[in-house]
Image (tube, rainbow, N blue to C red; front, side):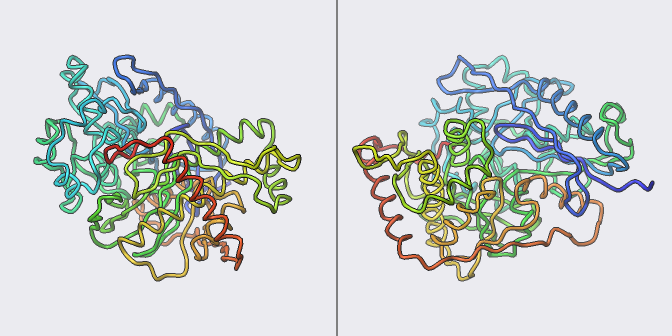
Length: 491
């Protein structure tokens, strides 16, 4: 039997790592996953790290299983996607020193030392904070000088995975946008920014374009995984941008990505920055395009954890069936979402409902309130993007695992007044974006992931009332718990 061409896609998210085997048309042959293992670094108040050697063994094992599960396929290319803001530090000879995930904030203690913050925002499209790679490196330098002295190279997590595959170091442009050491408009590492953070430019490898061939896979790695030594390693990139790319948006389109966090992103042909410094701007994985975004925070993670509380042994289909039977709004949720125009996320959250507790209140009401909280947070960030640049199109694109909920899709259509468009492969959007990168690198013409579903807004008078209730509940929590703070978006 003739072997079908296929790609191996490594996707390292915040919560788990996935390895998928996919066809050039986006069809998945196999997906294997495991949790990413994090450790608390006791030298800092809010620091996490992972061991790159352990994660690499997980990747190899998952890749072996995924490939073994597929008969009659030939892996022609391998690529990687990963969480943004995370980095891996390499020593001499490629020694794996440590890995710092996106939710590591070891640099927070030194944020007040940063000067010229407006200039940094101008160059990087992001107000400086411990979320970004420059401040993670600052935290290492200040409290782990021995480790910092051994560091010879810094890579994003996806670029590190590609380095392990082929032995060639590089940094993809969308990932470089997350470091605050990269000039977005000039598409280059910045001596000025490196000087501002006290980071040596010698630590930064050459920049690589997503969707290009980086090198041929190392024979030993190919043998371990069980794929041909002729397979090439393709530059992938930041998971949000690859997820966006899977929707194949046009310039000017807005894409909502419902994953662990929820970026609301506008695709542009030029660099856009917000005079009020509310949004982020950066490079897209697609050459010649930029993105600017607002982010609703850890909405998807909230939903996942509440599912484990209310529906620990049931699948999402059970949740949706129960949601379909709940037409009334019996409680309102505010769960720490992030709004671009605010300087800080809400540190406290919860559910509000009438007392005494009604006998009609069910677990589905709490989940419904959670989905409404996500949708309302998206709406407010959507409005912020429109305040920076008006949006006249009658649709938005959507992707990510959160959109497996039909109710969430409808909520967003109703709140934005836009048709929500979803393409095939939306649940594994970063993987689908990796497929597109491989197609570009190998010159595979066109993309066949064109099946589209549309969700149209419904004219419901209740929607505006529910939205006002949600905003009032959130304002009550802000008055109780939020103190004046700096412009930090801790996601």
